Amino acid sequence: MVRAAHDRRGRGLVRELGAFPQVAALDDGTLFAHWLEKRAGGRTYDYDVRLTRWRDGGRSWDPPFSPYSDRTAGEHGFVAFAPLDASRMGTLFLDGRETKAPGGAMTLRFTAVPRAGAAAADTRIDARVCDCCQTALARTARGLVAAYRDRSDNEVRDITVVRLAAGRWSEPVTPGQDGWQIQGCPVNGPALAADGDQVVLAWFTMASDTPRVKLAFSSDAGATWGTPVVVDDGNPIGRVDVVLLPGAAAGSASAVVSWLENSGNGASLRLRRVAANAKAAASASLSVAGTSAARASGFPQLALAGGELVVVWRDTSEPARVISAVVGVS
Image (cartoon, rainbow, N blue to C red):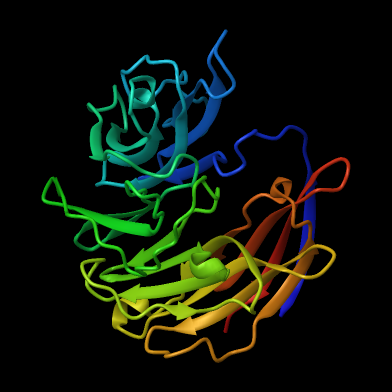
């Protein structure tokens, strides 16, 4: 049940609502944060990723920098963080440098940003991906696993997973094989969570013109995936997030997924708990709050804290508010 809710008022909204700022930590407590910065004198989508680090117990943040050396004016963003090891933050992002050439496409790239010093040279993981769906990155017992919306030559834009182990990226796999063919970016990317070898992936699709939110589990760090389960209530908007509940590493994996569901005159922020061995999402969903169905309502976020689930979302009232709720998961 929802135990408490609070709001934080704020102003300003990134035009690309899927590319929201985030903060992540290394095991020693070093914090990394990122945001977008418009390129001076550039066109609408000429912007850069900016990073900073917090290494001295909160006294100061490092001067901001970009996690790549490329200076091409174009779209860079949709960052996902996960620790690569004890001293480096894995940084996944979409990069538009190749869109400036004839026939060029948005690419998916990765770099390691150390606790101190410059980022390593970035690596291109995929040469053609969806232009503005957020990415996801998680650390497993065997290395990093990344999820993103791919883009085929005939505009099939399904969610794809790759793994980084022993310094090499794996060949991509598509857990859902939805076959969603769409001519434009849906701005509706995936979410990942991991604990040991257990991984859970959530995503939205509208293959065959049928909106669905799906969930799939992996027990081998993302190498193979179980059959996806539909978790929505019949008319979802998407904008998913997911967390693994305690006990996943011991083999009893279950997860809580969040999404926005159309509710007639707006949207409902809903949660559902799903077990890894479930053949269907049998438990009832929980409606946390009503919100707007407009893109300005953003992407609700989940986090586990002290055995409870913290849910955060953006309310589109004026002035805009960021609202949080605490949900029991026992």
